[in-house]
Image (cartoon, rainbow, N blue to C red; front, top):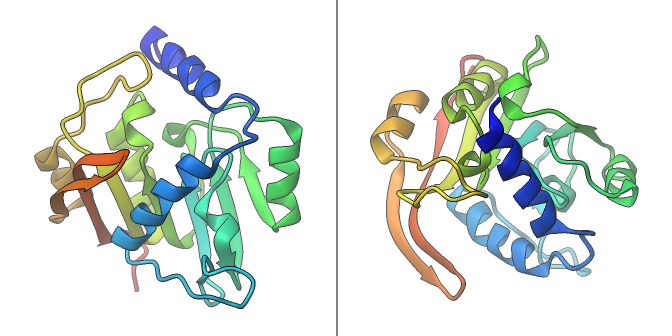
Amino acid sequence: MDKRWTDAQKWEGNWHGPCLNTYGEEKKQLLYAEKMGLQFHNNGKTPYNIDVKGATIADIGCGPMSLLLKTLNLGYGEAIDPLTFPSWVIDRYQSAGIKFVNLPGERWTGDKKFDEVWIYNCLEHTYDPKKIIENALDRGGIVRIFEWLDTPSTVGHPQTLREAELNEWLGGEGRVEMINRGRTNGKAYWGIFPGNSYE
């Protein structure tokens, strides 16, 4: 890890702040979920439920409000992020039966396999996006991904992701589209890819 990464994490931590009003980020997540092939349904309380039917799922770069919090019938979940969040955020994950793993995705290794690994809107913040994808493919039956392409490098986003690189790292071809939905706009990449433990 280098200074660019530590500066990016500081920037991202300041962006989230006390994590009290996350509506803007959660609204964008609805788009990411749609593109990653996740389907919402209404249970009478909220229309934003994802029935994962007992699947085990890891969310790399989860932030304080992982999409795992919107799942029903989660077999086992891990939310992985290097940032330090307020204690109530961690308590919320634990209350939902989700294990919070305070690690960079580059260091998320191990023998435990997951039915799915989710990566969305996080690789721009990392120091080695290829390694994160390798870890996800190694531990996941499938990898669902949504990322923004060709964004200029900034303090908070040190990585510029390219379509050809993502295709190479993921071993397939993702979908690419220009998206313009209010504040959620840019050149997007998404797809569902078989992992190394795919059956």
